[in-house]
Length: 223
Image (cartoon, rainbow, N blue to C red; front, top):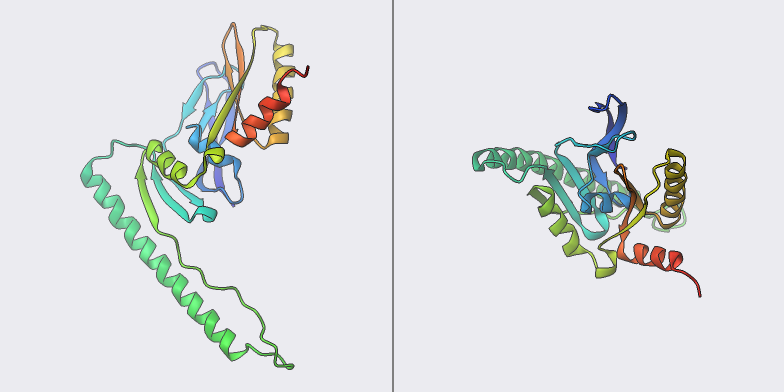
């Protein structure tokens, strides 16, 4: 399961709001977060009143077990070389320790399986197969992470986006518009991001190209 912490933001407009900031992203449990990352919106908080955005630069772990992808992500691409080496050394030590602990647990489980692998009828009882820890990628900047993710995805799985907009200035109408967009996004398992301007109100939907394509077909006029 992904892990996040609610952070309180105070917007220049005066609004105070909470927003989740992720330190661990597991797309097996939260597949929609993959497209939040690809859209560059992870750990970017949007004021619900004025639409201003605030990005909180915090390192996080990205995990995609289905594609054997595990990455430590430092949000800045401009980390000096000396600092990069320090980060790499610390991560290498932590990862080696975790790998050793995993190997120990696997060997303990295997030994227990051998000792009690048969029940009274002589039938072998199953245990989980051990799994090696995937290679840990260390990336600096979200662009590098996006390249890694896209390399593991098919064309249909890559990021798609759709903009729905209205020129209404009415807060009530904009609210109804957002409710409809959120319902569509929920049905298609897409992410929603709002861009609010005085003359235009835009709701962006993010998901796989397959999901966005299906949504566009659903919205197309029927003749």
